Image 1 (cartoon, rainbow, N blue to C red):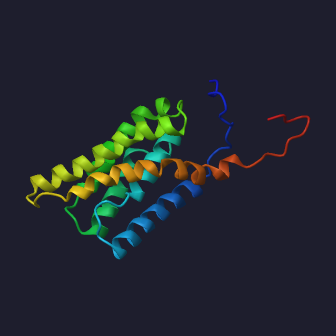
Image 2 (tube, rainbow, N blue to C red):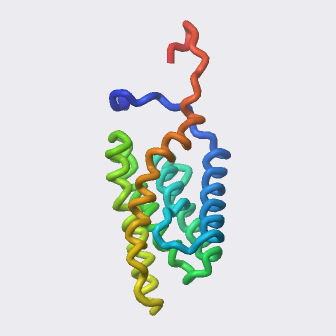
Image 3 (cartoon, helix red, strand yellow):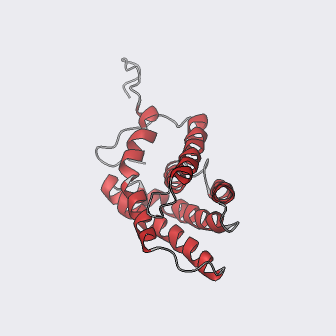
Length: 174
């Protein structure tokens, strides 16, 4: 497979780093929930799940998304399965689109993952409406936009360990 023009050949992802970033995203989600209940804030766990599902689909997939969704549900004290359903569907769509997304630059990738975040929020709203929790705040519509806007910084941060400069010599030109 040829790489798109300008894209660097990355080192393999360290599984410990991948799982640590997912745990860190859960920590950010918990911290954000402790500080404020604003609905418009980004979903850190969704961002990390989609990122690693797109970049490492054999390691992080629908099962990890389901477990992460259950953890977020338990922490936030919402209807059990609300985030699990949303993250599972989002994870499935990310696996289905992962090859296509990686062919684009960061702007194109952002436009591809924005609908994934919107579907996740839409499913959460639908579950809450069906459960009779009332109408969600309108500010919730900003959450997928802010989460997608964080795609570029997340890519820089999460792929940084894979971009380490190898030790080039005459026997290893890459």
